[in-house]
Amino acid sequence: MPAPAALRPAEAAPRVGDYTVIDVRTPSEYASGHLPGAHNIPLDQLASAVPALQEVAARHELLVVCASGARSGQGCAALAEHGITATTLTGGTHAWAEQGHELEHPDDARASWPMERQVRFTAGALVLLGLLLALLVHPAFQLMSAFVAGGLVFSALTDTCGMAAVLAKLPHNRTRPSDLRATLDALPTR
Image 1 (cartoon, helix red, strand yellow):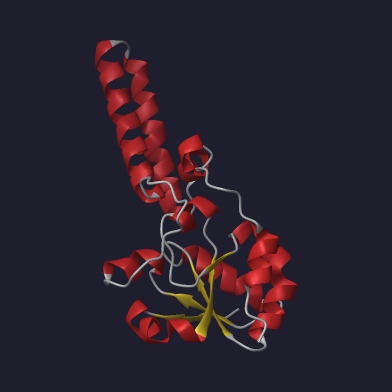
Image 2 (cartoon, rainbow, N blue to C red):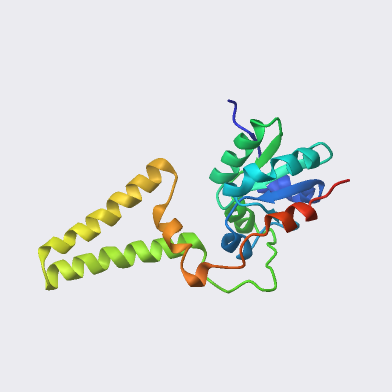
């Protein structure tokens, strides 16, 4: 299957209002800042939204976004399987914000670190703790550092992140759950 069409943030910014923007990140990631007018349909709920998105795509161009472009590419591929053409934002919301474009923040969003920063902090803290415990308690604690390093390598190779999945379940990362029905009702029908 061919790669989905992609736009760089500089190309998308002047036309962002012409698109129906679908943000496939988790609700907490979405709450940390999203493209103007974006609708949050997490990647794991995208299949349930296909009928509504088919209707929207018949009238509007779809721009699918995530944090870096990986999940939005997966979302575009999943939509293409249902005959829906969508474009992905290269570099995702990270690239969008780095290039100085505005992000919207919901009024009820909790101030928290972005998931990528939480993963870096947690991985670093676990490696450091493992090394300290290996020096002070028992050398076997080096295995904790090796486990974290192996997880980071696996994460890079597979473009997945188990640590982010675990951290997303912590109370400070939980925002209101995604209300798919309300999101679908808010999609443009004309």
